[in-house]
Figure 1 (cartoon, rainbow, N blue to C red):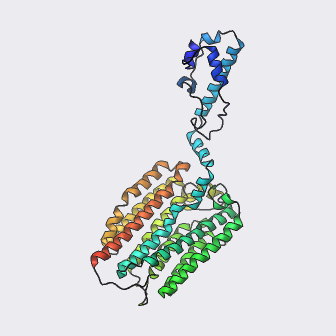
Figure 2 (tube, rainbow, N blue to C red; figure 1 turned 135 degrees about the horizontal axis):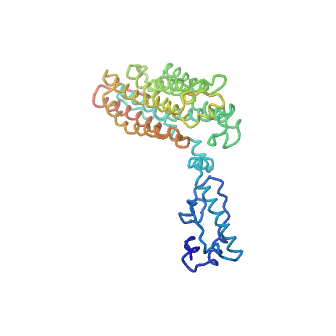
Figure 3 (spheres, helix red, strand yellow; figure 1 turned 135 degrees about the vertical axis):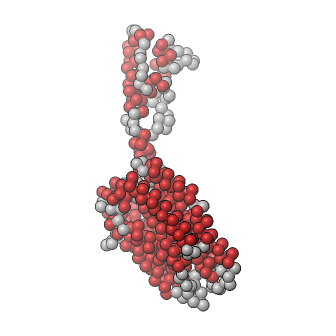
Length: 412
């Protein structure tokens, strides 16, 4: 009875015969691999006393004279030891193993990085809102042409970055790298440069239609920033200069260039303080995304000599820098509102993004030592970037509607 009580077998019969039948049906398990939770292994549920390895075998079992009983006792002890070993495995090791067993569909989704294409959406949207604020006319068709061309250019940025990080070994352990997924470095490289040619030709046609040489120059300079960020022989990201480079490329160069693409036959749109500082806000939040994207890549970056800010700082100090950076973003927004550089509506809408900013900072402060969870940091930052950009854009549009100034015609 003690044996049956111990093994919690009290349905449809009991005793040594029933116990031996149950154990003969148990599948062989190798608990030394900690890549799945016990539930995922369909492990038989044992009493809590077994799982905690605090089991006292009673005399009723030990006194049994058959060899079957002796084998059963030692088999129980082996199962107890294996379960105890499994339960003692660190939780984080289990999570890392889960990350290594991602499905191909998950890897393709991560490789596509659809949420990160907001770095194309926000500059195009803010630029179009600035043009509307300046002219009072919405050039919707031109907006979507700018957006489509910039999304294509960002595909080139993503693919070429994977190609050249593959060359240096920075993406050796990055399973969601496009090159690692498809296994053809040259094919991805050819596709990347073909895509860039398509995207840049779209910008060229828009610059010709807007009769804006400055727009073409600014956008070409923006693409050059993207090139030196990752491509040889420059690869400024490896010297820790990736953040200022992309700040310039996505911020003042791209945003002001897109704004000028809304010019008409009557002449180029003026570049005012509002235009310049709004583009700086775009570059600021874009830089936060890049900064956060390195939180989980410190070891791989350090191994190939890629001295990103996170490699230099470490996650603890970097979490503090991120906190100062986010506070600085809102301080700058308030200063621009106070000086009437950006409309008050943009400041008010911008303040509505404070909850997601707080969520980002809380997440990083709580998990700065957790490599697995830090992977999600950049997606919190993408949300802040997107909402903040739309907030500034909505404020510009609303300010123009309320101002009721005469509109300057824009040719679509």
